[in-house]
Length: 135
Image 1 (cartoon, rainbow, N blue to C red):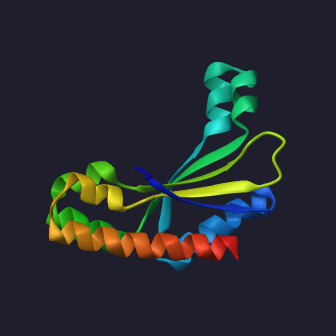
Image 2 (spheres, rainbow, N blue to C red):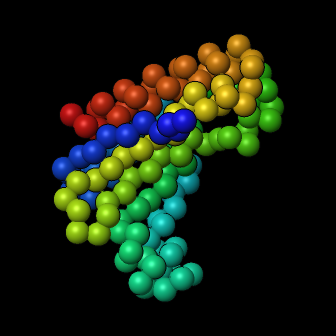
């Protein structure tokens, strides 16, 4: 089962990260957390491990209205939040990959119509954000 939506971009690393943030914001998502995987691997595992992963950040994105709807319908849904968005560029690559979680994975663990509605809304928003990034 595919569990992400993906686009690639020829933007510089810095511009791809910035455009991702902007596109998420346009769709009502704020970035609650940011994990710099390269820096973490370097710190915890050594320079070689950090260099091997390349540029790689995980943005924990959340749309408060969608989160409220989902948690109200099913309180344990919070364990699946926030929606992770990955921006990554392998060493010596000229393109950046941007991936979002496919919110339909939530539907796989819940049979609630309300969760299905939230997942559909989140899915549409994240797909539009990816289109914005890629254009």
